[in-house]
Image (cartoon, rainbow over all chains, first blue to last red; front, side, top):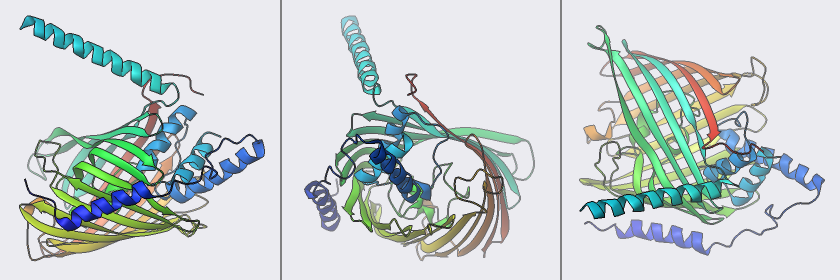
Amino acid sequence: MKKLPTGIASVLLLAGSFGLLARPQSPANGSSPHSSTAKKSLDVKEGERRFQENCGRCHTPPVAISPREAKAVVQHMRVRASLSKEDAELILHFLTP
Amino acid sequence: MRLRSKRLSRWRAVLLVSLCVAARAAAQSNVPIISGAAAFVGTDNQGIPFFQPILSPVLVVPLGDRWVIESRGLIQGVYLRENGRSGPYQGRFAATLDYAQVDYLANPHLTVTVGRFLTPFDIYNERFTALWIRNLQDPPIIYTIGTRTSASSNGGMLRGVALVQPNFNLTYAAYFSVLQTTENLQAGRAAGGRLGMFVPHQGVEAGISYQRFLQNQNYNAWGTYFSWQPPPVPLDVRAEYAHSPGGQGYWLEGAMHFAGSRGSTSWIGRLQGVARVQQFFAGNTFDPQNLLPRVDVNRFDLGLNYYLPHDIRVNGSYGRQYSSLGNGNIWNVQVTYRFLFPAWPGEHK
């Protein structure tokens, strides 16, 4: 079996190390539960903006989506569209207001 | 022998029940979904008519907050005349697996993927091959650069958002793939990656891709891409350039909704016009397996997409191709239906 060239192996290793060592985002960036309705409303509005900026580049939102389905959809798109954690959480707020 | 067979059957039954119970438990808060699209395409390619019924289902099974199993298949029929332009229509169906992968969301910056996945080279393969999302039915001429053997890779991938800033995100993907020759699951032995920058407020994304093909003859393919959506205008501009020993080329596509915002439900707001130009310059080495033309090709396409209610889209396009092997017209008409439903019933809210 052939070995991977050193350059490519280095790129893979570097990418992995970068991801593993990267500092996680602050939980204040939208991941904490919001009790106030105003804050939730702001999150939904911000979520809509993030949806247009990220998802809207390729497609429109689905016609009807339940909260349970939305969570699966957002996890799927977080991988496929390389969404940041914050974007994914705000888009989930928008899809399940 | 019979005892061993009985034990195996028992183990299979236990495994099946365990999987059902685990999936059911996971579904209480996070239901698996079946999504995708079905389409019927009618084409006339330089006087040769053919029809393609296509079904492309996507299965997504989230397991908690960090694990996702996802898969997309393609069941496609092709019906064409016995003698090309004359004779009765004959058809056959084929099924392929585009991806079947397990993702682990290790942290906000890293997702580890194992299995069969779409090769991340430029943006067309990962983003615009979905039936519902592509603006024009035909893929670009340079599509096979960086994505051979089958546009899918079998192996491992690291990807994510490396850097999140208020004004831009840096994304990356790095992968390796092993040789697989099983029918409908083919993959080439290759390694590569992609690095991209996204400026959300300006709607601009640009990036570079690289692939080292490590099979038969080793060679490099590289590419670059650009997309732009000016925020106040319902306009999409996308472009790619790719280079390999088999040739190089680019495509540039613009798509615009004629009125209102993207979510407009007026009859004119549902209409989208598309235009694409592309040029391909053949390389010195010709390899029939990379599916690239052996001569230079220029092509333009014009299309109209109409988004009906209930996730149905009707579109038609006209293309003109110029090459030293002959010029020709390509017509496409397509009806597409997008669907999304939970894998099993449950509480809707």
